Length: 321
Image (cartoon, rainbow, N blue to C red; front, side, top):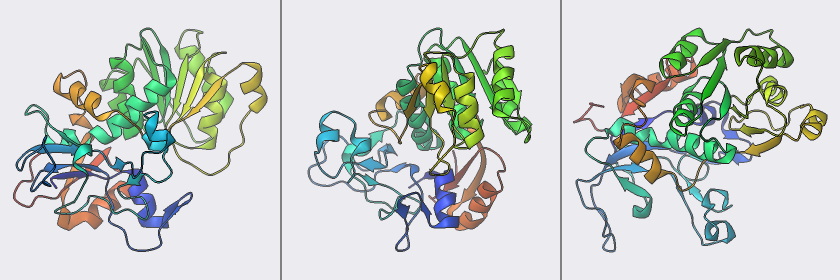
């Protein structure tokens, strides 16, 4: 293993021992945003050889069930997924993984970019679910890693106007540098309706065709509903509490489609191509790097909300990006 990014879910498992129905019953290795170098392959592996640099897709189907047969293997109840109980993750020196879910990296794509294929895949899947296309007006709630990669993918898919909001001025500054057309600094006492009104004002009276909620916060889900144009789509990416109060009557009267996102499927080749072609640049997302020996410090830094993406370097002989 070479580079492994720390995800918010890693911190959640570390601090709380579970997310929803995924409960830790025994010790578990964390990490599911990973890249590395092939050390050894099985006798039946033809497309990879020792020395190849790869990005690793953490979700691997265990059986050919109905979801796998229609290409939505992320929804398979029995899917193996790195760093989700009971399956170990990739934050280690060496890791055994299904070769079909290891994707060779072009020379122009770094190990860290390879690790960032995972959050980039979340964004690709989200934008597909939301129907982002040429000319779309998109409102993104939350400017953390997932909000920012959604910003990049929306731009790549042709969105004409992208607005993003967050509590952090530093993150909004980064979003602006990455191509956001408009940013909204949210204050802690801002109401959902007030936020939706600010969105409308920023877009010159228009409303977004698609809103992408990346925080899981109830008020942001409410704001996403209020802000989205009638007949539009709200995509829920952030994972928050199991239940939320939402203006359901407005959803029905204005025919707003609410679509969930659970991880991703069929995204790794597209994401790698985007990186190799320089259609998308994710390098600036990495703000901190730690050697594997300082994993606790790296997790504490992530927990404190410092920076954007924290990367752990697992190869003691190569600490480069």
